Length: 592
Image (cartoon, rainbow, N blue to C red; front, top):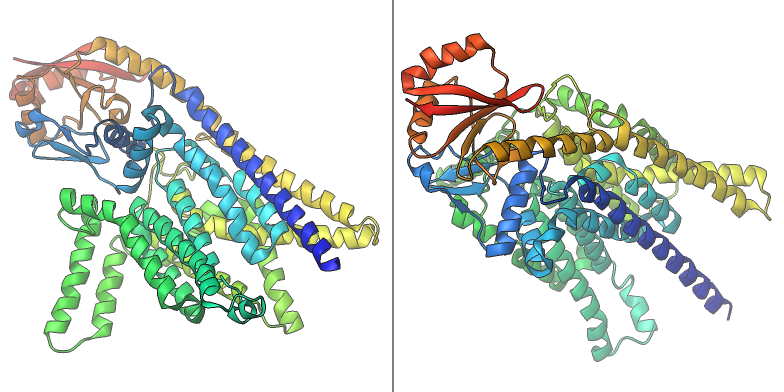
């Protein structure tokens, strides 16, 4: 009887936690989705990044027509120069320079529910991700830690920021990975103890098959979501593969052959659409739109073949080749640590320092008591530190300047989105610090009668403080806060509308920065007048299509030089049409 009461109470608490998380997920999806609802109305659906624009254009195209490329016949006359950034053109076919996952997933959903839902899919999926993040962390660290971690994640600036910037891959990839890991972990730990299954009367072959069938379904779901994550950001296989390998090695007895085979089979099936389009558009199953990554794959494969053909397999040579090509932009550990400081320690200290304290308290518990660490905690710590080391030193060795000012370290720079898995994995330690802090206060002030109350109030106060700090940062904390971006989007709407009014439907606009604003309503060329070869192509194009230039306002002396020398010598003339903003003007290029 007592056992039944305890189980009932436990179920009530679990149900209550899931309801709270579900409400948080709904509020998150609606709250973040309202940013796009406010900034993208009246048919003006534009993005602040070329990557986002490319993903949206092709996801919408795939939803409407099932196609994944745009044909531009005039590119055949001018060497395929007409395309925006994050796209490339080959023999007139304009294709995305990215991974296929978000385009295929959002395009398919858009074909079923209408393309109007595409800008809101990432906030919705991020809200669902909160639920699975809760379920995953609850399995490892318990219900209270999971609940606190969800609220930290729901207010965490990069998670909000890149959910609002909904056509980036990163939040979708992260959520798919969390869902896949939850199903995988559940499949591995199901049943918890086969011996207990027999004690519960499940030893007969029929019942046992039914019991195993559930774990097989879980393994299949894990494979599907990990496969979808892999085609959403294929480059992340760099750490996803070691993570899954480690999980398998540390749970090899519990996984078994059948669950592993099911997992891998469904992972392959989910990855197949991405692999297929890689072959069709990029010429290789594993090739993406990034030439550097394709060259790295070729070099690694060629190195392995040459070593084997030489009659002697040299692990050192192969490892050296792999290392050099994975870090094809260089390996710079000092720079990586500096970026980690700037984009984690210095940018989000209200998460980092509580997380460090929680990590030391977590490890100290076992060291102080000389207790044996739970196996699931060993797996989590091992996996997390492998992920962190790979991501910090891989992406930290690169230099990203998404912000026009290279001296600005803001949330909009790519490190914050590439390190989302690092941030997420750290949140349970910050939650643990909050729990320990609240427990100490409860034990000191509450006595036995009111201990729960005196623990709950400090927990709520700590989480509320972190939520306020996080929301303030993501909304107003820097020039790239969502509040300021909303105002810039309003200005961009006016800018876009005026350019569209002043140019023909088949016009081509040469620009350096505004391709993401003008395409696909207008054909675009990302360029300037600094290349004689490009100017000759502009001159050829101007014979067939109206040609414009949109960039910073040119002084009179520059206009004279262009008309008499650089453009004039190529048979072109330039005239100002109108100043569109305080800094930018629209010019027309006329063939002479």
